[in-house]
Length: 406
Image 1 (spheres, helix red, strand yellow):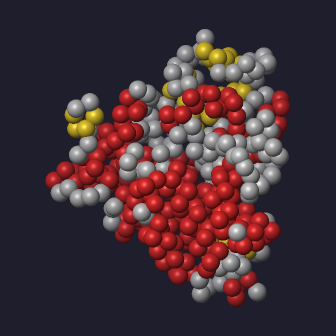
Image 2 (tube, rainbow, N blue to C red; image 1 turned 60 degrees about the vertical axis):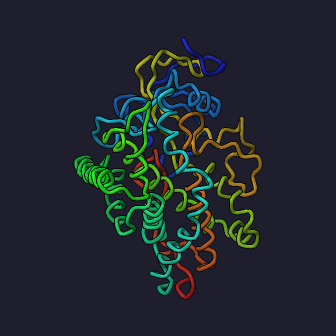
Image 3 (cartoon, one colour; image 1 turned 90 degrees about the horizontal axis):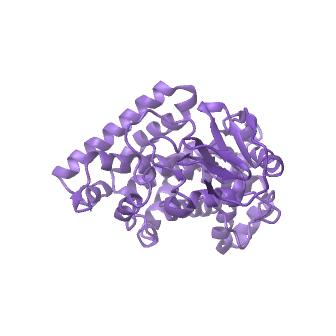
């Protein structure tokens, strides 16, 4: 039997814990602090049954232990599974050692050196979007800014037509936001996205360009070309995972700064501190609250025995507020150093898009500060959270600025 920690034995608990409960979504930290003290490993009967790991050391150790906690089952990373799918998202749902071969193919595309070259375009897109509402004195900085911003940046990053961003936004939103309330609509959106990817693959095999999909059509693994199904797996994860999470990161950061004017004032006066603050926003308001794995063999975690074949949620959000690791974890400290958060995961499956997400968050904050420095939350509207708690953020965030803030 594998063991990922030396915690004291604790009784197994079966609960109705639900990370998609609206009350939990509004205030997950209260739940996390309670679980850390009372039951750091929880079993829930929701969504077919899953285990929740909440302590930093348990989550980190499990993420490193891919031999026990596998990502290799299509759909297991999302609890419940987002859409019907019979192929893996690559490299997310491939275990080592094959995982490294797939990841190495696209790693240069996602490298820091590659992402740095995008900054001028990222800033251009941010300003074009702000131009559309700057004269209004009010805006929804999630729907009118963060959502189209991230989608358009993604098309530029992948070197796809920027005008395709609107369709990508609609499909990804339907997939993530409809998986609980409208699963058939989510499946239709997934089919449309897959159709787009498949058409792009076919076109690039016939007419190569310099884009991401051309790179994949020309790549080889174990001496053979990638199949269309493998390239589809790359495309799905690249076009979905990087959108929702980065939108959440931008939205929660702008919300926090509006709610904490002293920190906002300090960052505006000390812009060099913004990257450090972003790391704290990622820790304190983790865009990915949890991702699933499946156990390949029985394992003990925190005194609880988890059988083989179980779904296990790696709770990044809870790990990032563990007081064994972080001093005053309940506070957002914008100059926190060191900050060993795992908002992007760790181990083989650490987020390959982390450099791009950090760039987008930094530019978004910088341009909002520059163009509408007096922005604040609109008094007459209430921000709306996303309807799911595994990828947590705002779905609407109305603000006022300029004449509208007067």
